[in-house]
Amino acid sequence: MYGTLTEETIEQMLHRHRYGRLGFTLDGQVYVIPINYAYDGAYIYAHATPGTKVEGMRHNPSVAFEIDEIDDPAHWRSVLVHGQAVELHERGEKEAAFQRIVAQGGGGERSQVTWALGLDELIVFRIDITARTGRFEQRQGITLGPMQRHT
Image 1 (cartoon, rainbow, N blue to C red):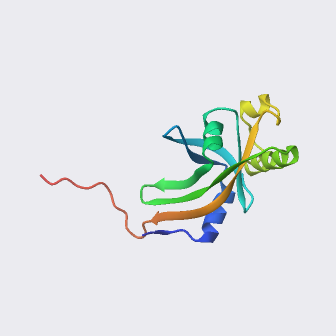
Image 2 (image 1 turned 45 degrees about the vertical axis):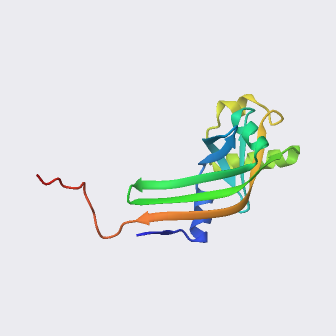
Image 3 (image 1 turned 30 degrees about the horizontal axis):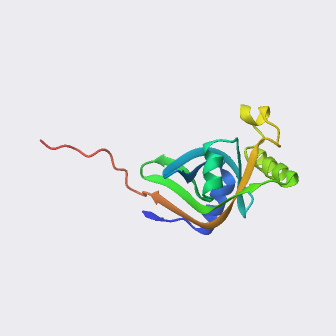
């Protein structure tokens, strides 16, 4: 069965994960880059260092964000979010967003970049969500193997 995820399932998936992929454009090119993130029920928060990702979002703040859970080709779920990237400048906002990201990651290992840079040098942003959708495939009761060739 192929279908649409419920709003509740989309919400649960966004809270459950630590990593996703950010899609943006720059100079006519489309980029999809893995990021770690946090979701607070209203916004997606992430951070970056100056570079292609930040330049792209500053040039065109329309972004997409995607997460998925894949067991195999017939059992998967995917959430796609569209929105506007908003860079956070106020230190309190940046600190709160960064702490959300660390907390959603379980407080585990951080990247070398976040240890090396202070919060003042780190670019912290949120995605103001304008739309979100989810799809799934869940094959039930039938296990199909590879197609058999007949000679």
